Length: 349
Image (cartoon, rainbow, N blue to C red; front, top):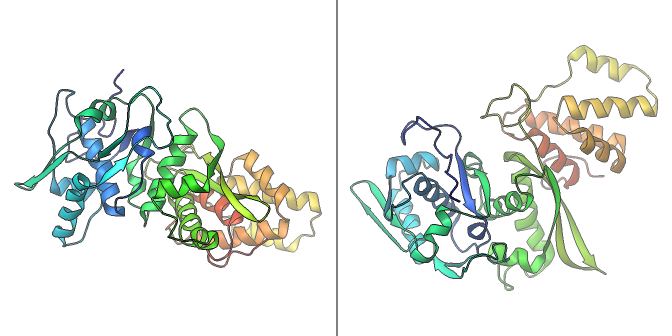
């Protein structure tokens, strides 16, 4: 059954739709070899979102370049670079459904677009006929907030965010997702000659992607490396979805950060608290100021020393007050998990 895309809310046209930018994306087109550029992947998602709002019988889709630029927040004057990225979608062949999530349909290797033309300030594009109907009417899919993809800085962050969002699914709020390192490389299109040492792969690709997802999306991600002896073989991602708190706007997407009042801080610093009192204070602070769910707050306080948690929260509070963090809860969990090389001066356990 076809599920109508809600990329553009009812009653809004192409040029004034500013909210509810959700792409219904087939899982098989998320699980692809990531052979396109950061810019091209963002373009591809917007083109698919626009295509899905058009009548089912449409074969040739179109979008105004001015609308495409707005949706991907492309502010550069280098229009040729933008056009080159658009055209690359017809010249790049990728493997779909690489982890075989969609077992009911035949997939394979196709170009992302079968044809694309740019004329009269429009992009006109076609999908490969063998998979067009599958893309327009997905049987397995993820809902992706396209305002998030523009906040990332690399194609690896987008690819991992899409994959983890898809793997989490719509019905679960948290899950542990195990991905073999070989499969991670395939998903990212990183061959065996790149980042040969796992430490390089982790430093250059894995940890930066996790950090960006925690900072800008509505899911929180923790990372554990599974090893056989000293040899890493898999990545275990702990994924938690953070829903909007009551009263929060769609633009915020997360709980608004509220630091303790000044008189409360003075009281905390001056009073001689016992261990249980300190735990209760940190538990309350994690939930009320940083938007952490109670179960996650319990886990944090059971895994880390109270001094470590308190010091990290102070650092995260300074970062959040700068106004650059969209997902406060996700960023906080990531900061507690990660090393100081990825979260400024966060203390290390």
